[in-house]
Image (tube, rainbow, N blue to C red; front, side, top):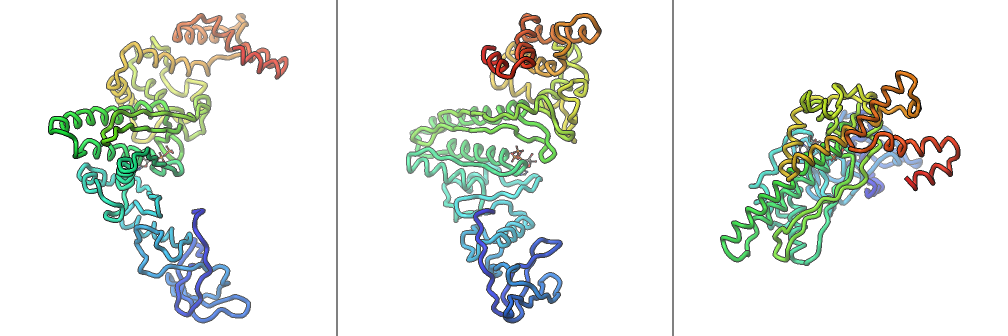
Length: 409
Ligand SMILES: Nc1ncnc2c1ncn2[C@@H]1O[C@H](COP(=O)(O)OP(=O)(O)OP(=O)(O)O)[C@@H](O)[C@H]1O
């Protein structure tokens, strides 16, 4: 809300103003008479009918009733925080979740299924100007597509907001609409080209959709705010030819929150894939991969929680596996991924202080873990331990020495 402007309220008799309210934060009141010489004014609360004497400094200007349920808030004579919030709330309770503020499309997440993303709704938005249709993420995608065609320039749509705001879901809807409009683009040469184009788009849409379970398995986790929170940034690029047909797509990922591997808050989990493997692989598969029975048995996972309400990790694992196969990964590649993931978990169980000692039980357990990691990664256990331990051992000597050693390693 940093772009809102606080305008002085108008204290003409019977004008509406926003006043502070303990329960609602802000509520509307009617001005009753002129402010006095020290800046106090009588108002009547719309909510309770109560008459109050309040400092004019605490009052904010309100728009008139005709601006209620406004689709684009740039037309507000008064664009202050209460007016914006009131409008968004009014629309939200009427089951309208998108609102414009100039070029920006604001989405208030209802956290429930809303049937507004079908192909027939994509069709309704295709080729339409923004003001011809109610605010929608499809309108944003459609406008970007048309600008790209007419201006011949790449377009960017930025999805931003706090965790759980709906960025990931809305970016999927943008892709869905772009695939829809590109797949139904008129002006291609013959009906067979249209058909070929549609088949290509179907395959591309499938691939773009199927890559998601993989990205989410390895990059999403449960947080207290969002059970499926993306812990990385994503830059999805869709490449079009000059006719607006899709040539291909690529996804760049960045800023993965890798610290989540080693520790999590009590209500959080690490990345879904680890729990999926624990729950979804058979006992014999787990044995070969040295995967333990329970998440809490791992040092890296023992502080977080291991379940997500209403989510079955075994089913999710099957979807991830299915997606990997759909994306063309072969059994050997999938096996390698499993081995690396299992080795990552086992690293947490290595007790560095016990390495190089072989005279007690803990050292023995430790050697076992090191052997398992080495087996999974196909390396020599001793060399592996030495390469991991080198910086750790030398850090005790001098900190300068440590950074040199890490660089060399
Ligand atoms: N358009 C939508 N319709 C219905 N529910 C939605 C919609 N968008 C999001 N949600 C719900 O909100 C949840 C969180 O949304 P999403 O994962 O897109 O948030 P996010 O902003 O990407 O969060 P994070 O930054 O944590 O990854 C979804 O799992 C879904 O349940």
